[in-house]
Image 1 (cartoon, rainbow, N blue to C red):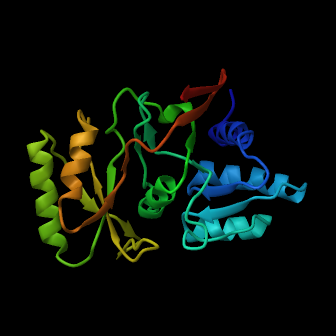
Image 2 (image 1 turned 180 degrees about the vertical axis):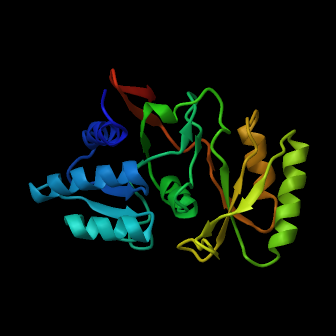
Length: 231
């Protein structure tokens, strides 16, 4: 049986087949996206010409290391394709993202793309979202009030659970955008669309890790091979 790292490479390799010469790419963050960047770098070294918008400083550094040319959304505001991973995905192409803390930039890049393909090993496919804690990016000002507001939103949705401030060591984790991350262990999310709308209405919430209506296709790798879900 292939290990998780090999499955990620297989999903990334399948997605690489969707990349065409001259494309403007959104390039995601996380271990599966990093597998894609390394494979992309090999193709660039062989003559493929693309330009990428990275969703995190870590992805940017890896792209530069393997020779993938970079741009910004200000310079290139419309992208052809985004390739990114997910922490969870259901069969309806709804995602939970943000385990690595780049969810705001990931969502901005995905929304600027004509198409988004999600790559993952098949363990990320779930019947319903919620086993993975939902990352919520928040402003540091008024943090306690924001947490209370999120708890009220959750209760109105029939959800409850621990909301923890993400830390790096003893200090709060700071996103590339200078914000904080709350990890909300809500459990089963029965209505992701309603929760998304309700969280966006909380003033202290910058963005959340529910990606709905952004992905067009899932590429999932498992011991029996690669399968594709979506349109």
